[in-house]
Structures are given as structure tokens and as C-alpha cells.
Length: 150
Image (cartoon, rainbow, N blue to C red; front, side):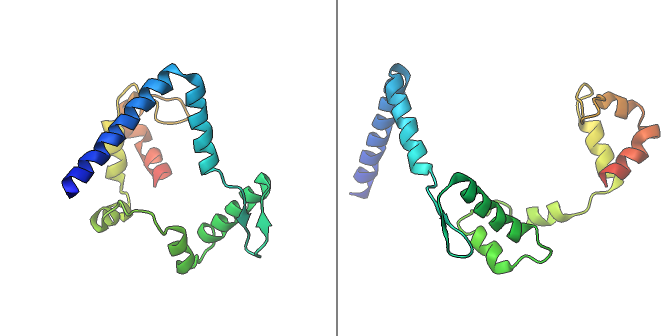
């Protein structure tokens, strides 16, 4: 029974996708209607600020959201409860082992390894110098580059 229900769901999902592809490509009005529906569904019409006041103007909504996240992430001592609330529903994608590796401080050797693994014709930053410049002149500029990175 469960298998047939899943098969039926799969059939209708595929059929809807096929219809979307056919109608979306051939019918501009259909495509724009779908985009408009999605935009309306995802729109935020209003938000309650920290004082309990309802804000429905776009500038006010932006201010409320910016202030909320600025308070959480830019204070010296963010409240753990607020961080947990802000991240509720976010799926953890980094394992404990990956997190430990990410928190390991860089060393001089790491910087040099990255520079020498880059393609020689790549521009590594806004200075416009290609990576080959740093690779060929590492004995001269390596110390400065490393200090800038660390």
C-alpha cells in the first residue's frame, strides 16, 4: 500500500514537472504568473520589533532584521539563547571533527602550501599580481605575505 502511494506521488510530481517545463518554456504569461505567485508566497508583509510594535514598511522591516542580527552577532557576549533561537531549524552540516579542523590556527607552512597549489596565472587578490609572481619570489615576499595572512 505504502509503495503504491509513493509511486503515485512520484508520478504526479514528475507530471507536474513536465507540465512546468512545457508550459514554462512555451508560455511567458504562465512563467510570469508562477514567478509572481512565488514572490507573493515568499514576501514578508510585516514584522514585530523588539518593543512589540508591528512594522510593515520595507525600510522598517529591514531595520528590525538588521538590528536583531546585529545585536546577536556583533556583541562581545552574545546570548546563547538568542543564538539558538536564530539558528533553530538550520541543519548542521559541519561535523565535530570538521569543526575542530576549521578552528585549528593557520601556520606559515599552510599559507605557502596554498600559494603554491594555486594556478600560476590566477590573480590572488585585488593587487592584480598573478600567483606566479608570489611563487617565483617567495624567498623575498613570502614572509610579508604570511604575516598579512596570519
